[in-house]
Length: 252
Ligand SMILES: [Zn+2]
Image (cartoon, rainbow, N blue to C red; front, side, top):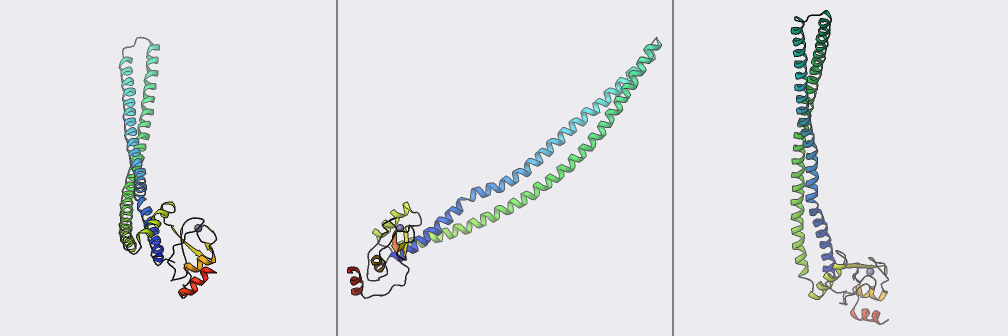
């Protein structure tokens, strides 16, 4: 086979490494976003707890006002009761007074319940705030790890790109152009191994005669698979046949 073919095989290996590193690097924004999403959940929990806290405080104020109003009403009726003329009117007022006092007492109970609810919510707020701080620590660590990993991959990518350029200099232009053209159709897979009389990429038969030439150092042809068009190479030990023998095989 053509003497530059091992370089093309090497080029393909590096191209595969480059493609995989690039694919990994492209996941960076997504992975950072996933880390952020974790944080958003904890932030939302804190916001919800704060909102609930405000609401219970408002509710407590309203209930306290209820207590005031019922007490105020009882006081007013009591003042009126000293100036009523009839027994019935007096009785009716007494009823109103006890009703208002009972309502004031119920409202006071509700205020107490509400105070307990406020305490509970304050406890919950403390928990979710601690959770948020923990999530922030975890996300910061995550991001640091992700960024370190990516810096490492970027370094490897730069090294592979440099290695690729170095290999390319050893390949004749027309062969490099052929490789590039086939790579457009088969990214990272322009080369196909010929083994067992078959193209290992598409399964198309490779003639024994072609296989023999591929294994010959003396032959400098470039063979392409008739099925998939990839550039064929052989990894079989090159038999080091003298040139005449290779030609003889070609004629048989
Ligand atoms: Zn093929």
